[in-house]
Each structure stands twice: as C-alpha cells, then as structure tokens.
Length: 440
Image (cartoon, rainbow, N blue to C red):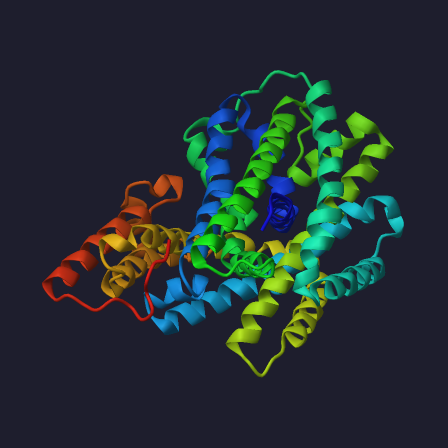
C-alpha cells in the first residue's frame, strides 16, 4: 500500500471520527475553562484523541479485533458488550444524534419560524437515503469520504478556525466553577462525550477492511498501516480541537449555553450570514461522514454475528432505525448519552489497557475477568447515578474512593481487580483464553 492510499484512509478515518460532538464540545470547553484552558484541553485530547488511537491500535494488534479482546473476559460478556456498544454508537444513540445535529445546524437556521417536524422528517429522509447509498459498498467509502468529502470538510474547518484565531483577541476569562479546580480531569471526562473511543471499537473493522482491500494481508502490516492512518487522523483531530478550543476561549463573552450556540454566535460574528452557511456545511459534512462510518461498521459486525443477515440488510435496518429515532428530537436523544458513556468508557479503557499488558500475564482470563468485574461495578454505579437514581449506601461507598470527585472512582478498583486476578492466576495457573496470541 503506497503513501497516497495511507493518506486517504487516514482522512477517511478522521471524517468518521469527526462528528457532532467533536464540533460542539471543544469551543464550549475553551469558553468555560478560560485561564485553565491548557490543562482542560490536554485532558480532552487524551480521551478525545489518545484513547481512540489506543483502542484502534489494540484492535489491530489482536486477531479477531474487539470481539477477541472481549472473549478474554468471557465469550458471553464479549458478545453482550459489543452488541451494546454497536447499538449505542450506531442506530440507538450516535447515529440519530448526528443526523439531528446536522438538521439543527445545517438546515433549521435557514427555515426560521417555518421549521417544523415535517422539515426534520424531509431532511432526515434525504440524509439517510444518501447514507444508505454510500454505505452499501465499503470498498468505495475510501473514495467518497477520503478523497472528496473530507477535503471539503477540512477546507471549511480551516476557513472557520483561521478566521476565528485571527479576529478573536479577547483575553482568557476566569474559569467557570466546573474548571476552577481539576481542569485537567474535567477536560478528561469531557473527552468521553465525543464517543470516539467507543467508535474505535467499531471503526477498527472498517479500517482493517479498507487496508486489506489494498492487498495487505499480514497481521503486522495491517497493524503498521492502521497505526499510520490513525496518526494522520489523530493529528488532524488534535489540531481541530485545539483551534476550536482557542476560538471559544478568545471570543467575546456571549454567555452561550452550549457549544452549538457558541459556534453559531462565533460564525455570525466572523462572517455574518455566510458564517451561518459555512457552519451548516461543516456540521452536515461532519455528521454525514460519521453516520456513514458507523452504519458500515454496524453492517460488517452484525452480518458476521448473524450470518443470516446480509451486510446490505443490516445497513438498511440501521438506516431505518436511525431515521425513525432522529425524528424524536435532539433533547430526547441526549438524555441517555452521559449515563451510558460513564458506564461504557471505564470498561473500554480497562480492556484496552489489559490488551497492551497482556503478554505479562499470558492473557489470563482470571486477570481480565476480575479487573472488569471490579471496575465495571463502580462504572455501573456511576451510570445509574447519572440517570438520577438514588444509590443510598452505595453512593457513599463510591464517593469514598480516591479520584471519585474527578469521575474516576473505578480506577483503583480496576487496579485491585488486576492484582486479585494475578494472585488467583499464580495460585492456580489457567490456560490462555481461546485464540489469544498477540501478534505484533
């Protein structure tokens, strides 16, 4: 595979990652963090760029990808966990969220008072028909997304960010209450909202397929080219996050309630009505490429999990479900986002960390299982709390753990679980989990 192919696959990966959350959260973080910006954006980039890159690398290292990594805990856990991940980043959460944001930012501002449920219905109908057509053939995705759509998206982003950085000169303001203390950890948790680490579990199969279609078959070569494509996508994401964050920190205080309002205000200040149109193009392209990537990933995963369903059938089902849920409205979709993320991210981080260190404990299922059980218990508690459920004594237990104030109360239990697993493994050694040779 030549450098040109690697570049375009890297651009395709960037476009799949770069969706609604990637646009909304960095500028709002900048505005809220103020003088604590650099610590906050560092934390954000670690979970918004570094963690997805680590997940993608882990998936490429292991034959069988994310499913095999989960099998090291237990095959039943792996299937349940991956199905939940795919459904959540696919038709039940991320796909309708992106489609709805594309409408809110790309179409609704130009409709004014005439915006209605009917206009949302018509937009999402056209949107998902195009998603379906592009997703039908994974081999053509690199051409459409890497060579055409992504360059257009990047050009629009360069115009917006360059104009903003040149024209906004306001000094950093005092940080909001949330960023006065522990700005790094606050930014770290905000990076969850991009959902990119979870998406990496799904996108791994899409990128590996795209690379293998270029004639690359050897596992070490697949990992090497995945690493290169990931570095291209990661560098672009980090630059965009930094630029958007600085825009938010340096623009005149507008008191925006969220990143969407802030970006809308910034685009009007910078370019007037043309800014609104430019922002609409950016959101629509970004959301479209992400939805295509997620749809294709779901198609490839579920068609292998359920052989009776063809890839095209799954793509049709995913687009139909996304279309229906998109018309429920953005507020309803976002209500379940945060609780799910605080439950799923710790498990993802733990599984990826164990994958990188698995050679030191021979892929022992006891280490994997005990670590996931201990960290997962507190991750679930955190998610239930985010849903607004009263946890009683369990809440006091969770709050007493180190790093609880930073939303990382699962970290120490994860380390304890790993230690317990190592002790159990040495006390009565177990065979490596099925099919667990880590190929570099």
